[in-house]
Image (tube, rainbow, N blue to C red; front, top):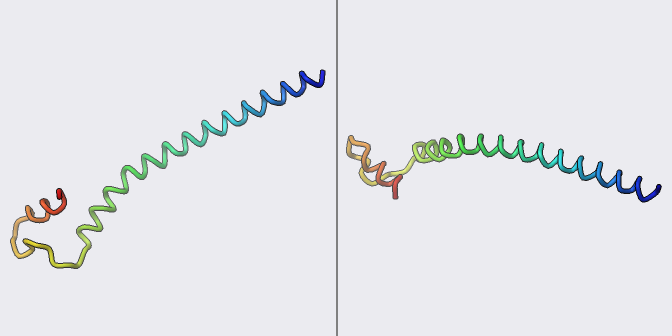
Length: 71
């Protein structure tokens, strides 16, 4: 009887751990989606927010900045 109670307790613990793991996976999926959206935007804002002299800055076109971003 004690062995059966121990087995039932172990199954309940494993079930609880599985549910917690699933919730954590769902939460990490949400955080990953948010990071995927905001990290590139943060990179672009940082590049455009720099207050330094950029090669080709005297030109009116944007292609020097695009080349720097690609490199």
